[in-house]
Length: 173
Image 1: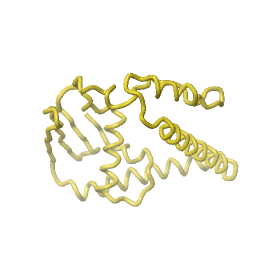
Image 2: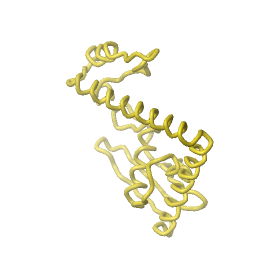
Image 3: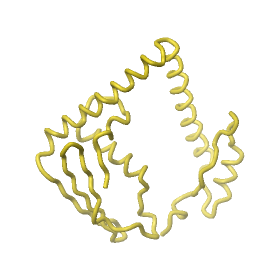
Image 4: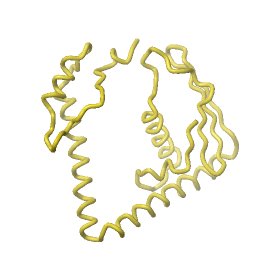
């Protein structure tokens, strides 16, 4: 019925503080919730994997900058983002020939309504969607963005790397 029943709700907190992982604190949060985690070690392993990924990306980016210079790396990152945006938009222009609309009811009767238009940008309009409710059927802006990115990658099949260019010409309402 409520978000807290779906899992542990953690207010923003540091996983790493002053260069040191705060695993004991995170484990305490996971164990002491009203509905505690059933798999604390798995949760910690997931967080460790996420941190390892971030650290690897940071290390690799630093190495690229050392090898090619910050300006060159920044220039190519900007070009890659623009190429991604242009390619996604080009493919969408071939696919979307007019306005699109859909409506779906969730298990609790809440409505998701969406209309899609392609002009100078891809406009995804959720006007008419049910308001936020007390149950666990809500989506944060981050969840909506993630879902839109996923859908755009799947429907366009664009051969571009995942980056912020995917959303550059997308307007969410």
